[in-house]
Length: 634
Image (tube, rainbow, N blue to C red):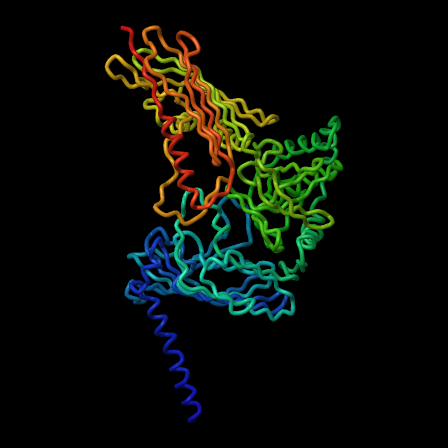
């Protein structure tokens, strides 16, 4: 009995400091001021433990205490858990505390909302999520979230991000993996050296007092500079399918053999139709273009998140029969048709998005969020986005351009880089004929042609309603008060990938009157109105991820009642960030010619160079607003 009493007292004394410490973490008033700076939320404590027991059994345990400082961070509580038929949620619990650390609400497993884990555009999915649905009364408040989950798939080992994103600080966080499976586990850490992170052993890390990062203009993707740990087994189970992952080569081989093979059978009538359509094509690329346009015309994109972790594509025959598919299904369907024609193509895993994000070449694992098709073309590749019914053949700007991707070949996986759209190819060329009367009113016909990445920023206008097209131009040219758009015409040349807009506009009193003079800003249709944000002390590097060129040439027609009194001086600026040139000249008795060229170079720069970059923009803004003076003869 004495031993039991001593054991009980020892438990009490050991538990008391832990309980007292947690009570302190529940009181938001005790958050250090350094952790509050730039923060909308503070992760007071998070302990993540992962036990890999076998190739088909993994236990995930997590306890998290986070204080939400304001309404911008309501989603930062992190109280949710994804699951499917291969996942068993053993524990799910959340408690809400007020500013003084008093419990005000408690949620058990059945109190969490339960819904599909994917967006409403998904036709069907076997992935679901349980999430905390809580409407706060006051700020700040603190959420304590505890969960324990058993996974029968080991392909997706949760990564660790000590700093979760912008405007979130971390007070005390840790991550530990116990690998009892007997299978080799690979770990990769990135960007740890710049943060207060301690390594206890190869699979155990902790961090304290990681301050919130504030978003800054032109910052690189967050994952480029924030700390992250990734883990991957060299052998894994993905919903009953065993995989091998010692390199990208064997991971790709597994994908090809276990996920893609057996999904590409097509009905004989479709094969005959495709062969007939391409009978006169002279090259593989011509055949591929015909097949791509055929696929676009008869299918549509619908998300389908089922089948071996959402990684196995639908049967090509089902896509053909139903007329829809997700990125995996539509890519696989297009590949299956090309296979029948003897045209080589590769199913490709990639990170799709506006931000440029690479598949990590140095760490093979389950990565990527999108699938596209790759066609070898001499020493290069052609990339096909199969989820769009409108994008031109071989156009992948702004979503899958300039990044490392994993192509899947019968021999295995290979990391290759997608197309880089060069600065000079991303052109917006604008020409205009502008008539000015002696009251300062204008009428104009504007013709703009966009190429490269700029094509993708303009071609969507033709699919808008007329009302929305007009609103788009009024927003684009918002510096022209009272703008009236009277006519719009579009030519979308998908073969050359050039989008041409012809727009007729007018505006009263565009030029300001000053006595018997008119002050006219000749850059009517491509003006920079603001520069990047100013920072007293920038903390992050910056990048221009896609360069571009704008060229402008406007003929300004004047009535004989106006004469030229003063023109702007020509401007020429050149530096590492780009170039800017602008001039206006008289080319006939009644006509002025305004010319402008603005080039922004692609590049990565240090934080110390930001002020010079911003100064360049400020110069462009200033000169874009230059005026000329016209004097009335009457």
